[in-house]
Image (cartoon, rainbow, N blue to C red; front, side):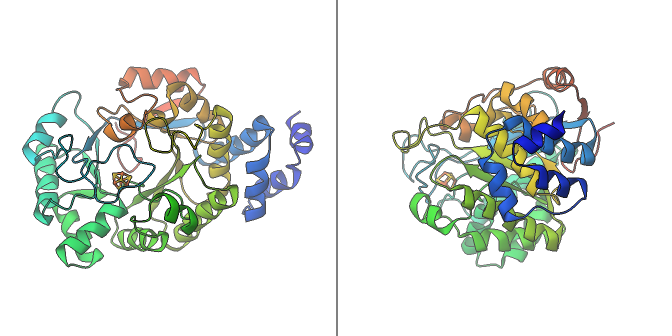
Length: 362
Ligand code: SF4
């Protein structure tokens, strides 16, 4: 039955390629992104997903910490940042961070990101990691996007490799995927001209991979970017992954314009668009093992559906995620372990609690 649906959707050639284990091209990516038969695209992504993970869906007991909202990058799409000296600006001290993270269940993964704060010394970052590592020896610390790592290299006058080595010695286990946004120079110039260019982001990810520090990668879509720019973004991730194998997971993030300066120019993405983007990411990124349905941005209900459109990771139980909350994130609260497992089981999959490296927690 699906064969006919696939043919009718104009995806027969792509289906053949997937069956033969052949890599999809840029043109295939564009065709999939333009396809209005969502179930046909989703079916192909499910084949790819099942080939990699069977019925398994991963989640992690984690915590988020956004240590400062003071940022000098002033990205136009961001509602989170405050300028230095702003009464709403904050910095969380290492002691306070440990105190906040101690509330709730003991995490396996601690996700730490913040603004590019010119007022914080380099030592703050090392102290933050050391204090958290000492208090939570069982948890892997996933901290600081490539944008923050670039800032730390400039701040300390050290090379990226040196900074990464020092952060690793202080407790860093892996690096989150933020800051990639969309690699298009055109969009970067319009929306976040102060942020590091794509080449620098990729160079820092490459350096981390070479030092044995895995990273994630994201795509922020649904603002000014074209389909071509989305596909090119995915292909640059795929290319680097061929070289290093260091990306653990890819995370498509729909842009949430509600509380940003772009709210009058950009309409929020639709569920259709979000599911199709998820599926296309699974199909083009044949060498990135995991694909995350980040429920904090997608909303719990859509994230659950995304499991049928290529996603194999429902992220985590999450407590306190300030960045998406500031942008009008659909759900910035916590999910319990039982709640997340229910979502996975109800969708017909088998929940697997993981650590930061996707090893099952036993
Ligand atoms: Fe700063 Fe990140 Fe917001 Fe850009 S997206 S303004 S770098 S906090």
